[in-house]
Length: 497
Image (spheres, one colour):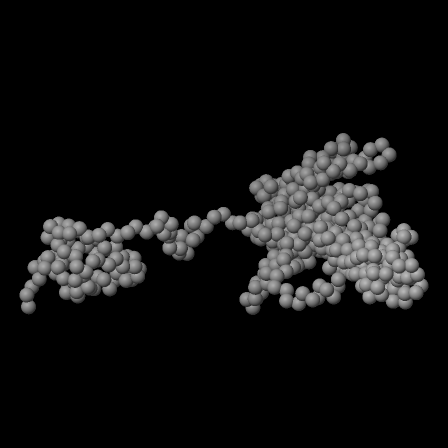
């Protein structure tokens, strides 16, 4: 065997004159490198005797082929550049995908703020079901379509019966012999299709100008007159009824029912509550008004089933009757976050990470018409504010109460613990004194509880002195703070009469 004296990365000049496909079969080390090049990106450096270096770059399955009849000393052809959008394109991997992802898009609403449901029904195959309830279909159409159909139905009806009147006159020969003396036509003064169309309008609308009149010697005309009168009454009842119902739709009454822009969470009577405000702008009230709320959130069951947009009831006073409203002035609707609430274990930090939507539905009868009215709105997770309360809008004036709707959506910040309602209830059970104190921020509450824990216990011998000081202080009507007053209550009960 002849020992190869060339370096591993250098190819003999004699082999460069061979076809490029044969050149890679001679050196075994080079073929081994090409095998590795298919798995990842690598660089193959070919050096010529003149010092010219050819660099072939390979990535994945893409390969750069050289000319088969390449000669020594001839500069190889440059590889064509890829288009800019291909050169700048990057292979998407999980790591780059996570890094280059934009900020989280806002959640899509299930119900708009104005109450419209953001759901579109697609691929409905059984469209005939809409025709089975034609009246509701016509009422639900847009106004432009309703007016177009209203006009079209009347015009087609008039044209159809006008054609029948013209056809009777044509068959009887009234159009030819109308000017002859002694000829009795079916309809007097009907001598063209236009006059027949005008007679059809006069008949169905009962205008009765008296110029075109049906005669008694035309039985087919009498029968057609009866049919047109009956069908015309049906068309009038249907179309006028549709327009009346569309004009008096109770959903227009919902335009004057207001919901606050935001929902708030704060403490009421030592309990965490979710609150929002509703109001009615009209003086005519909503009779038998009731309100309910739904939590819309995707859920995964224990078996692994994914339920998108799962609906969960939010109790806003169904068991106590607080959901039935006397909506004369704006009311704050409160949901107590207890063990049955879906927010029971949610703290402020956890709620900021959750994605949900609260849909509120206000129902009642319109006092003026007696029709049922429904108003809807929704609150996204970003519209539920922790640690706020609503600004009062009701004030007492001379002889009446006044509602200031300028402050209807206004809120103000209040001290609210950032822990969940479950943790707050546990703290209140452990320390019954905490409800009597003002709610502070978490840091301040921790400091207050530590201060209370550091209060030294009294000696039984010193209780007599405390009782004497309590009697003296009672005469003066002074106390040293709520905590001190609460600690003295059991001692005061033990005093002799």
